[in-house]
Image (tube, rainbow, N blue to C red; front, side, top):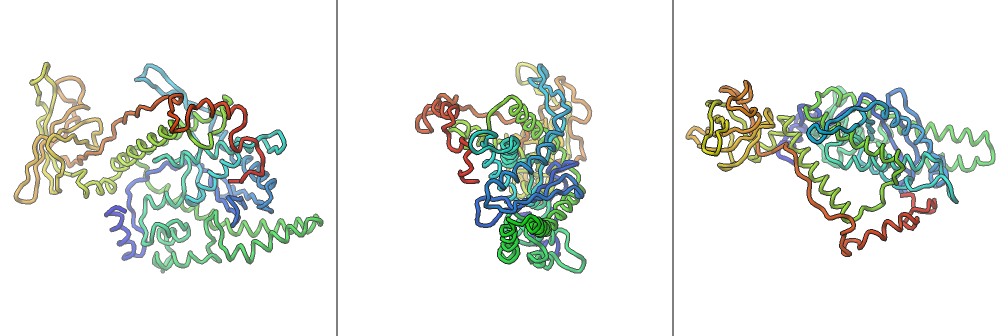
Length: 509
């Protein structure tokens, strides 16, 4: 936990309400996100019990599994879920746009928009990921056939589960993560995973403090858990009798219909409060202005959505259960690069996030007191424009002479530290030499060089493009990391990989 977040939590306790830790919204929020609130049966490996799904507050559709231990009903639930999710995804596969690549020498195409899925908490993301894992290898023919939409749903859920691991992605979001990214409460991070308690801090009822509202929200009789786990008391005293009544009414169609209706009403009562909280959260987040670089990260989600759609359309196979050695290393490298870039972009977009880096000495803010925009360096083979500016700051400057700094206001410009002169009055003078972002001539365009009186932030954090690492070809994988990959390819082609036979006796998760 950073120093500023710890301070915000302390202030939340003192004020009795959650404190903002961001001045802009750091996630993309779709106009019609697909909200999905899942429930799973306790004691079973990711056995779906119910789900409430829809793209608008008044479009909620309830899906239930009357006998969650019945695998046939589980796959029927998956097929019904696919009938809602897949058409929603297909709605974004119409219009496309051309994107310049290779410095404008070529173009590629991507969809102009992409779908967004919202779940209550990280456990909901895990539920979808495991549901995708257990369905994407199923077959619509053979000994244990499923509806053709089931394996397709599994592949898409796996795609969204993988995008949820990508830093900065907004394709699949947990509402608790989205809210705690922008507000700090007076409770622990574990307690923040409870959506009703989190709202108790962010938007407490009149006359109650955040702590009091959160304590009331922990009562499962009035605020059911946001899933996918249910309350044990609810499981034992209400859910189990309802499932048993449905099972006992198997021979009587009328009694079975009544038992199904009672079970459906019971599960709707459990999911409805969370459904309302999800859309309240959407409203809160929509009230924040998006950061300048949020749209660029959403473009990455649209690229990924387009690539996966093209892979599916071309007849490509489902995602493997386990990555090979090289694929796993490439994926880890890609996630690490994305995490670094995401941290820098958040700091560039948000002064509150940048303040954390100012505390650690990675950034400082100062006023421009001198500027020489016409300075030319002629010590090399040809003269180049190298303006210099002087900043005065009251913050500690921990960067050494010669270090390269960047300004969020002019991200394409580099600043080399020339002098750092501490003053006796607690102020420090910093002289910077600028390069880049000023054209190719010897005269800087207006506004490209900071002027006297500007207050600027300079940091060691760079939003520049990060080069990809070099990895061996898959066929060069050493035997210590799986041996020759030809065996894996042959096994996949022959259906000998674990779980490729579509047998529902395989573990659901």
